[in-house]
Structure formats: C-alpha cells, structure tokens
Length: 441
Ligand code: HEM
Image (cartoon, rainbow, N blue to C red; front, side, top):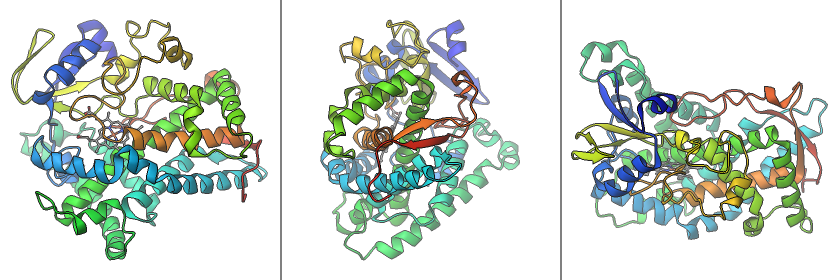
C-alpha cells in the first residue's frame, strides 16, 4: 500500500472485493480524518468475522461510537489503564519479569543455551496481563495465545465472506466465519473456567470486579465482560509482546545501539544488581530505542480501521458514508518527507534526540501514530509501555545476546507476518550470556 500510495497519492480508494476502502498515507490526510473530522470517523467497520469474535461489537474496540462504547472505555481506563492503576500493578510486572529472567538464566547455563525469546516475551506479557485483568495467571496460556494468533489473522479480513459480504455463496464457501466462532468459543471457555474460579474471591481481577461492584449506566452481562477481557488481551498483550520482540530484534541487528542501550542500563542500575521500575525514566536512550522501534514497526501497522459516518472531504477528495478508512502508520513512519534526519528505513534511535524530543506518539504528531489518534486512540499507551520497558531493560542489564549460527547480521531476517498485528516471521532464537547474575537463578 505504501508503494501504491507513492504512485497514486496520499488518499487512495481501493476496492477490495466489494468493499470500498480509503487508504491514507500522509500526515496531512491522517490529521484530517483523526482530528478535523474525528467524530465522523469514530466508529469502525464490522465484518462477519469481527462480528462473530466480538459478539456483534459488544467489546470496546469494535463497539459503535456512542454511550455503550463510552462506558466500556471509561471502565477500562479507571480500573486498568490510567497512570495510577498501571503504577499500582508494578509488583506484578516485577514478579513476572523476575520469573522470566530466572528461566533465561537457567537456559543460559545449559550446553546449547538457545532460548526462543518470542515465546518468553509473549509469556511474560500475557502472564502479567492475566494477573492484572483476571486476578491470576491463565492456565491455558499457550492454547489461548494460539487462539489470539488465529483471531489476529481472521480479523484482518482477507477472506471471501468479509470481502463479498452480500454474497451468500462467498459466505458458504468461506470457513473464516465458522473458524471465528470456534475461536471465540474456545477463548470464552477458557475465560469461563477462570471466572468461575475467581468470581467470589476478593482478588478477582480488575475487570471481573466491575460487574459485581459497579453501578453501571448500561448493565453488562457476562458475554460483554468476556468480550471486553478478550479486547484487553488481544489489543494489549499481542501489541506489547510484538513491540518488545521488534525492539530486541532491532538491537541485535544494530550492535552500536545495543552497546549504548546496554551501557546505559548497566550504569544506571549497577548499584542495585537488578532493574527496578521506579527508576526506568532515567533510561533516556532506551526510550529512544522504543520510539524508533515503534516508528519502523508499529505493532498495528494499519492501526484499526475507521468507518465514515457522514460524507466528508479529505484533502479535497469526497469520502462517502459507509466507506472504511485505513491510516497507513507503517508508511508514515518510513516516509522520507516526514523524517528529515535521513534514511528513514534505517534504525537510528538518535534521530529522536536530534529532534529535541519533540516527536511523540501522543496522537498530536501525525507523522508518528503507533497508538492512533483522536477519540478512538489507544487507551493503553501507559500500560503497553510498562509492558515493554521493564522486560527490555532487564534483559539488557543481565545478559549479552548472540544469534547462534548467523553468518552476518545482514542475514538477520526482519520479514513481517500477515495479520492485524505484525510480528517478525522468523523466530527469535537467541543465545543469552549472563553478565550480571540474576537473583534466585
Ligand atoms: C505497544 C502497545 C500498543 C500499541 C502499539 C497499541 C496500538 C493501538 C492502536 C493503533 C489502536 C487503534 C487506535 C485508533 O483507531 O486510532 C489501539 C486501540 C486500542 N488499544 Fe492499544 N496498543 C497497545 C497497547 C494496548 C494495551 C496494553 C491495551 C490494554 C490493556 C490496549 C487497548 C486498546 C483498546 C481497548 C483499543 C480500542 C480503543 C477504542 O476503539 O476506543 N492497547 N491500540
């Protein structure tokens, strides 16, 4: 889509199957949709597969703009995602990261000492999120992650039932809607088990307490609660784990950046022998690394689609009602016009330093939109960053990293997978070398 936009301009109308889809690929176009006409683009298109997975949009991500959505979003923010709440979950994150470090250190002491870091990163984020959202680890975590991965592919929408919604035949021939239903059933069954175990406990997790304690304007039944929990996992864990994986992969591929980030964290925490969350804000370069990673690899490269609710004009082009609108954040992050520091394809965290720290992802700078912007902007920025910062800093503090059997770093594969969230296609098999011992390992 980036290459097409270079030929046809920053506002393109694509007809994908039966679906007219407007693709925006410049900061100016993104600003018009997410700021000037934000209200008109504050709902999302609903496909047959998304409808199955979200119970017809009874979750936060796909609920139509309105009172129901506002209530769900408010609950998620007050119970889970506000800066104060995120801070209060610090101990959970520290415990989960400590467990991951012990497991990596144990693997480092074996003869082959190769660790599947994707698996580890995914596990640490999922376990920490499960403890916060549900009140305990998810026993069926691996099965759950497989279902999330499947949902990630299905909701991308490239199946006949979603592309030709008016066709009875396409719906019959496509297995996607059936698979989406099965996927939702399996995930809800996992939640049922956890909910049953914890509903009566005092520590039953932030989201489960809402239904019991809350005086809600619009009452939520258990299916709505489960849809919301699924959202907080799918939007939260998958994105944070993906960002973490790209951070580590980029550092491996860029030894100078790795050296600088490692030196910084080892210097900052030398006296404590471990990384603790309350001083993470001292790590200036690490934050530049995270920003640069999100620029090159926004975990949701096309954000989440919006739908035009009333006819609008975007950069002089008419956008009719009902059209899906996609902002190509991946293309914005790699646009040479937006990143004057030079070579936008290159991983160079220093570019954010040279910029005087001005460019941020708070939804006001339309060159850099890893979390989107406007009313439907990601409410989980603080939670997501907390999921990335502590594990990343800790892994650099305790270990050096090698890629086993790699002839040269140029061969380190950065190909992306297909899906709403895109992670690296190749696994992240790395050899950790302990530099600073891990407590309890
Ligand atoms: C690095 C981590 C994350 C990234 C890159 C990310 C990115 C995004 C993006 C691009 C959107 C769509 C925004 C738009 O339409 O303008 C979004 C929406 C959303 N995100 Fe995140 N996210 C992250 C972490 C999280 C976390 C940790 C949570 C919760 C635990 C979360 C919950 C949500 C929800 C509920 C929405 C839907 C908001 C709505 O439609 O009103 N995200 N996220």
